[in-house]
Amino acid sequence: MPPTPTIEIVPYDTRWPGAFAALARPIAEAMGDLALRVDHIGSTSVPGLAAKDIIDIQVTVADLADEAIVTSLAALGFTQHPTITGDHIPPGLSEAEADPARWRKRYFRAPEGMRPMHLHVRQAGLPNQRYPLLFRDYLRA
Image (cartoon, rainbow, N blue to C red; front, side, top):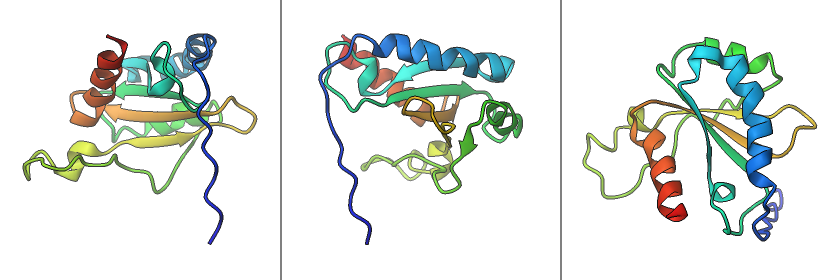
């Protein structure tokens, strides 16, 4: 069994918002109208919060099944991770709320040499698209 990678939590870095902007700009341009919004999510999006030095980006799309998502991101060197196709389903949900189709996503690896990041593509209106935005905004407040 391979060793578990070490996760290092570092103090908040005031450069993280700028790093997000530099990563998000070409993604938004490449995706064009496919990207309804591009958001900085995760720990690095919360001022003052210590975090892993990995920028999390969420791209919201109208239709997660649109293959143009893969094509537009591939033009930038991103590759879709074949086994990450959904998010963790929180416990305690009704059967309808826990439907895995409501928690699906596409996850992309950054090209070699790019700053460490996680690129999540989620469909507008689904719980897993709203949750990271609500949680981020809660922590910011």
